[in-house]
Image (cartoon, rainbow, N blue to C red; front, side, top):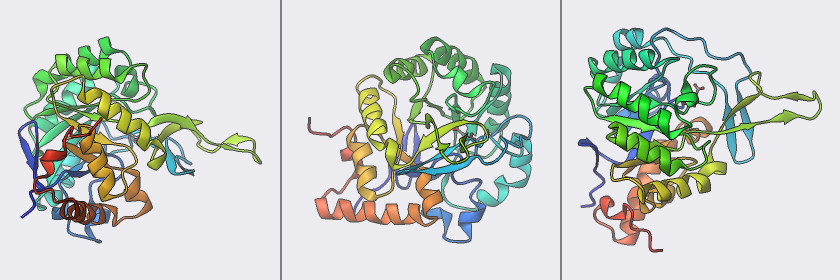
Length: 302
Ligand code: SIN
């Protein structure tokens, strides 16, 4: 028997593969294609206090080996989500992570309070969204502000707190340490890499918002390097993400120090990506004779 279970900050996942926030909505569309209970977990679409329409379209663009998004945190509001979407989602045997957002520290605290009272398993403080004018990445660039926002929000969290870090910084390990010092129970990285696409014929940016966040296989080497660096910098667990499309990609992130992973852009390219990745991960463990997936964590031979 191969053990695929992992534990992150005391929360047990049946396998390390979690849907990344913003690429899986609240699961409804995927639930018509496969049983969501096969997933380790789902990080829900980012929630704010108020309903948001997000940025003007076009707000998604395909790029070589990746995609850009400038969605801008479209969501129905945290309380609406809890009343209308959460009960259906909770029927599946998978862990739920609420991704919390805001314009101000007070907003983040309020969403943390609402989602702490709801039936979710963990909270993910999103201080790395590059697509909003207020809040988002502005809280996640400097280590001092990562420390301050984590410390401010933590007392409102009655579930383990993950801090989701931005790669658009000078040294991500400083921000990882700041999150740990502020009380994070885990960190998640990387959110998207700030980028843009241009149409040479219209001579315009492809995205209405001009800039967006790059994800997909194009960013995987950056993400692996950052997970590896953070694993050597903090003691709290790491959830790794950035361009995962296969079972061996999951293993690579775990070897670099991730205890679990999130899959994002792959869900948009192929809606069956996550069940396929999970079954290929099991094949990889069989082929390599590994009976406990946890033995991969940080086991990179350097
Ligand atoms: C978005 O809704 O703009 C994406 C969320 C994120 O990058 O954190």
